[in-house]
Length: 251
Image 1 (cartoon, rainbow, N blue to C red):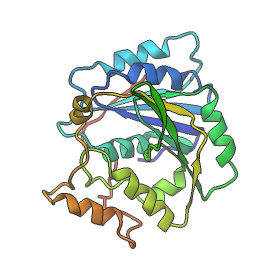
Image 2: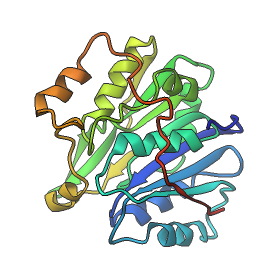
Image 3: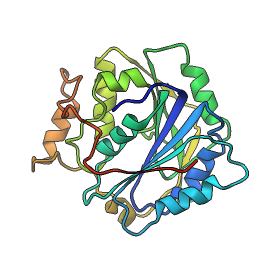
Image 4: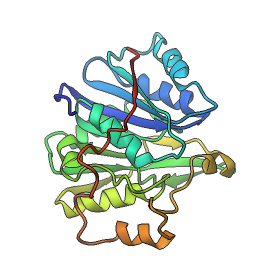
């Protein structure tokens, strides 16, 4: 299942019981205007949070003029950021895809500025840096999973490697494979977002990526992400398509 390219940029966020989601979504939706952008939220097994209700509340704001807001839900016990984003890719209609975390506050006009840098360069991927406020101090925070990617690029390498469970290494592997496939990774060093800090307990609820499915030890995923020959991952032909998905067109 791959949809025709009808939007310019698809902004994709995956969430699992993250209280910062509503505030983050509101800053994105104020920039996702008209038919040029679409916003896709993948709810991966939230148990204590009604993500759809919060998304609808954000979309109902008078400041939101987006015409395409999509909610996808998968009831899963184990968090898998790579598979969640791959699902978002499958439903995306944008010529470009922006992967975004659910606990980031986006600065005004940032999305439009990113596309302005990338348009006209089909072999260019943007690695977008931001800041984090911690202990009263603002510091540069890398955020390796925040990227603007041509849809053709992510599809040519079969998306994220779904064998990575949790989060925290799948994005590095993804970026490495894009470079091996001939795409240029350009850092956007002017911070365009702020990371809302959260406790280590909250982070642990999302299950930091510490192994590859199948019970391998932690060194396995480090080897995989640094493998100089890996470009297309050995995902199944139906990658990004879990067996059961709830789909709601919010707007």
